[in-house]
Image (cartoon, rainbow, N blue to C red; front, side):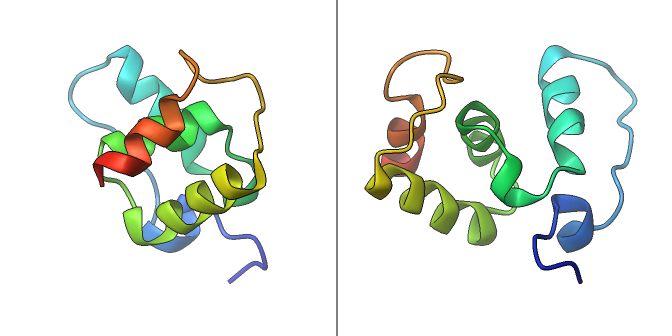
Length: 86
């Protein structure tokens, strides 16, 4: 496994659903990215969908603790809100 795995490395290849939506497109776009390269908005989206939470929650918590703000969230505090809900 690569030193910085992607969701594809952890969960397998993307399986195209029978429908298309903005949410599906956002998840598909994030699927092959190394986890450290995911934006805060992508992390929030994936966590809301309960995708790979065991891998993504620690990353999200570390970013929040470090004060990492990459200006990608839909609204300020989006990632923190998703982490609090878990």
